[in-house]
Length: 261
Image (cartoon, rainbow, N blue to C red; front, side, top):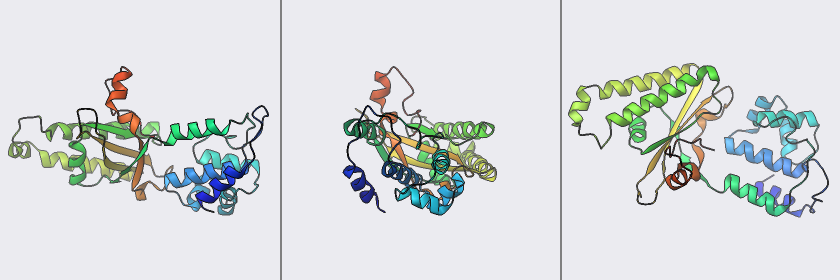
């Protein structure tokens, strides 16, 4: 069943009484599960494996068919929600509010092309950016030092390759530019050996008076929790977290350091 079919089915549902507690409709659950799975780039068998349910169970949910509540709870947890997200009775919200929430969540997302961070060329591209956005929600506490280590190494590369420093390129080579590249790539290989995937891309994010502003986007995840990460070639970034105007208006001087949604 396609997304357009699911949307048509949702649109044809009768309006629910907003003062009566009810569980989400099967078609709404189908849409949310399918949407979340494809946003992650997961195949049906990936979600079924991660949620601990059969492939046929996921397929039935995505067709809007009736399944047992414990299956929906497992799928919810597999997608990062809490148990009961699809099964807990609640007061429905009206279509206008639902549409507004959808736009608030997804309306500002911008796709960014990414590749595994594994070449000197990729490091140079990140180092030439004006800000860096790290995304690492699926990294365990025990492995967070890898994220901070990578951040520090990329900051160092940014300083060495900066156009604002009056360092002759030949001089930077002499003091160890190549060695810095090698150190970063060896560090990334170490991350890969412990099951961490590092993806990176560049997001053009023109600002007022800064038309060439670019943000480096780096995503780090654990393959056991995000098995599709090594093959992912696109990330969705909320444009609002890289807006300088928004951060200045909110009193923050850390534009571009927020989390990618």
